[in-house]
Amino acid sequence: MYKEIYPMRASTFDYLNASHDEWQDENYVYEIKYDGERQIIHILEDRNYMTGRRPSDVTGRLPEKSLYVPHITGFRISSLFGTIIDGELIHEDFDKLRSIMGSGTAGRAIRLQKEYGKLKYIAYDILEYKGKDVKNEPFVRRRKLLESVIAEMHANGVPSEYITLAKQFYPKNHDIKQVFEEIVAKGGEGLMRKHLFGIYKLCDGSKKSNTTQKLKKILTFDGIVTGYEYGKGKYNKDKIAKLVFSQYKDGKLVERGAFDGFTKETIEDMTVNIEKYIGRVVEVKCNEVLKSGKLRHPKFNRWRDDKDPKQCTWE
Image (cartoon, rainbow, N blue to C red; front, side, top):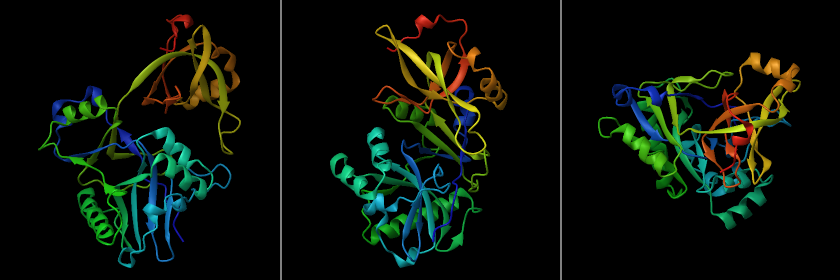
């Protein structure tokens, strides 16, 4: 049976204020930040498992969805038993990825992939290698082990089309800032910045790794607070955790999504004084605008009390 593993969370690299020397620090390697769904693959004797990073609201456990992608998890390679790798499921259309992984059953997920195209898996770290815990090994060593695992998979018939390694960029060979700008210009999400000697730190509450950092494109939008949502889980269900963000489109207010990112103090205040937030203009930051018009991963950035609500238009 697989272990319940909450994967490492990355901190944020402040690239807007970073110096040239920080961008080009050769103690780090950069990888493409893939826009997908985080998944851990457990290669075990009884079968292979695949778990995400967010527990189910119903069971409280990490959902296991290996049967959703049998072309990725259906292999049996005895020499790799006891290996656990970290990576990302991707699709060229993120909305279709969400539809597949949120479809509810393996059968429906497989049928959707026949229509939309099969998901792919990008491997970027390893936690256990053939039964040995390697989380405290430096990343440069873990990457070599991961490369050997993926090579062994390919040698045993696992299609390289569906499982591959994250692409890397070393500062000694690349202008990293230029690489980042080119990726974002092409619609990519950004880069990951990994210290060559950083260890793999399992998620512990809200703690994030300071040796694995993300560089993500940032978009900002001004809108009006038009509603709110309570939190989930036994500790947050009685507190307002998100505010609904709307903009004017053709003269009517249209919702763009719900955002969070508040301090504990603000959450407490919203819960008892929500009326002072409704109707207020806010600047929300996000990583992407989905085809539906909703904002991807919207977060609170700042209040815009200086702005007229009528100026908050969907363009």
